[in-house]
Length: 378
Image (cartoon, rainbow, N blue to C red):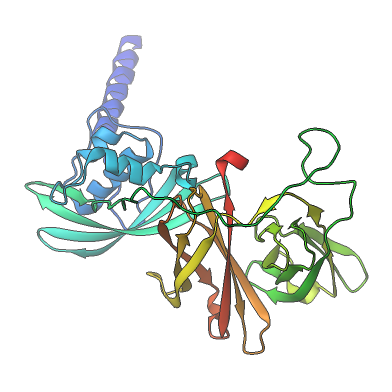
């Protein structure tokens, strides 16, 4: 009897191992990428969605050589360019990000080609970032290959970029290496507008703040919500949804989120702005061009445009903050988004920030400011 049980358990274990070796990814519209686990016998990319799933899983694991083997070579893309496009360069946000997961939706399929939409979720230092990207697929005999577009990297000619920007240095007379100033008066900063919006996630406070002084200021806006009995519901700050460093006379939008608190429960909003005197410069100069509102692949209204780096230094992580106004000039929403590619000198990168569907029809104008983070100043 004991011998029979031993044989039974050994046979069952072997059967499970064999089943695991031949297990293939689910080929469906809700295929989700998984970063851990692999088979000793790799599944065959014999369908478009299975081929793209295998490709994205290899890209997740940064198994570049294997992923490059899944790419159709018709476009002349090389492995190094694919790695750079995926993992980033020049200290961009993408260099600090990793693909957390993905879902696939087939859009088109014929006998020789297909198109699949991938909704990818990236984990980044500034929070989760979602990307929607359409992949072309191509049949190669009995298997399918990913059509990875060739990356065109603009070549900036050698030249001299004149430096004409203003700069403010801060001499504190205090401890070496201290940031900000505590022994002089804070800059004059004022909140010039505030609007409470009821969103699907909760109450959102949006508006604008300006630096009325002749010196730069580091700014953060805080808000406290109270109910009809005067009880504090929550306290939050603008965090990164504001251009923190304001040069003299500059204006920045701000946004403060209160998740889970309906606007109907709020009877009072107390605002507080806390400026500090800091060193700053008016460089790099980043222009915003080709702005327009249109629809994205999912039917959402988005503001699109391009950022143009007009300086001679690399901007590692650009951050777009857009304020949207109704017909009366009131701020009704503020959206922001990080660009995951670095802005090289005299180079440009596209951006897109979303407008809530409930507010899209009310938007009559908009204004974009660009915040930025540089590794050398971090």
